Image 1 (cartoon, rainbow, N blue to C red):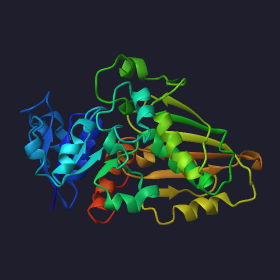
Image 2 (tube, rainbow, N blue to C red):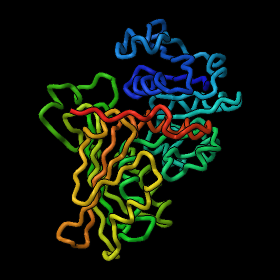
Image 3 (cartoon, one colour):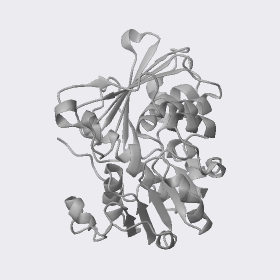
Image 4 (cartoon, one colour):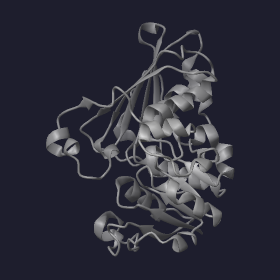
Length: 343
């Protein structure tokens, strides 16, 4: 059994990680830390875990964490980078659900996250944990940087077009919507029911922290700089991301449906829907799937890609478990075989 520890388990990504690992056939949950909730039974905070998780939140103890085979950081940015090196030196594998190791240009990371990076020496080693791109590197990795939720939906939606050089990479548009759980579990006026309910708004239009991460991935796929307009929106739902992606085709004769079906044919968690489909966020609620549909309005030179994920699963904790499975030589789908919840 894989002994797993979680640092920072009181947020939405943390409880989702607990839910998935508690049902994983090859994992033993060893400890979960929280400075603010130390001494509180996990099931008292999250009653859905009663009968499945009997752990008590504890203060972070480097010695106890070092006894784990893998440690997940379900923490805000700036936490994992202060602890990862010590754990790696002890032979522990580290999976960071936060942003500390996602962006390879450290100065760029510091600009967007507003702090000095305390472990720049680890950034080059960290493997970006998008299995559909980096599967083989993930298998050998000690340190995984899990992608953000928006970057997962956007990259999976655009990668086949960019890899094949079929679109103008200077004029990409990602119009993305997220449920309020993407903002985290902390108290915030903007995510109160009376503020977010029955309303929708754009935010971060001038620049969002996920923009450089998305651009980094698409640039790598293109082999050249890309131009991306990324506009996120807050929607009145709890979980889910819907990304509507626009690109101008430079070779409109290519069979796009076949291209996507072949690109993701062996990917267990990417589902290419039949022509003229419109994926819904509720179809991926609680599961690790990305569902994608393609459209060419009026058979013109604009391709519209619709990409949906659950921001807490494929956009966070599910993808982290998928990475863990690869790192430890398990079936990639282990612990992730649930069916989406409807309604």
